[in-house]
Image 1 (cartoon, rainbow, N blue to C red):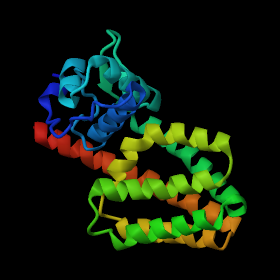
Image 2: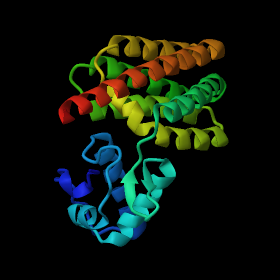
Image 3: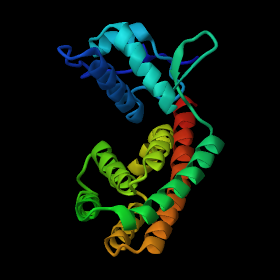
Length: 241
């Protein structure tokens, strides 16, 4: 039987209500995105608008706006009866998106070597060090956000708005899969080494090395995500048996 949102703990979900509706919609989307990442709303879960709106302390109108944002991001989909549920993309779909993501980030790294400001390069160095120093102490969500901020900083530093927008769309679709991968401690040292290599190449403004380091890193990410998703499915099957 398919689970619905009211079967999961959505505590600590209240949002501030003294804000413009557009901001409230964005805040609700951010909170739902967090619920999906932390699997308070697991993949395949039917989302009860009434229950989730109540948990967030908002009306169903801004919630529907938030769901529309997440539908565009690929995190939420609608059934034939127009009921929202958390998307559960196939391994094949995730793999195809990651191939494109690798090409986008490789291009971003190449362009960033020419267009990045010194402060943007310094920020990438800082984020890489923050992950390395906090590898064993940062909460999984904080580690993941730092990781994604490093990648986003490089893409922004490319100075190419079309690339930034395209990367944003693919990254939104891969958000949950990348978080599942980021939580794995196995292979963490390799990930940190790859981040350090990316930061070092960018610091030298070596376009070829930066591009290759990012492409190689995304290749490792593909493998890690596949392993993480398989482990997750195995754990779910074991729990149900």
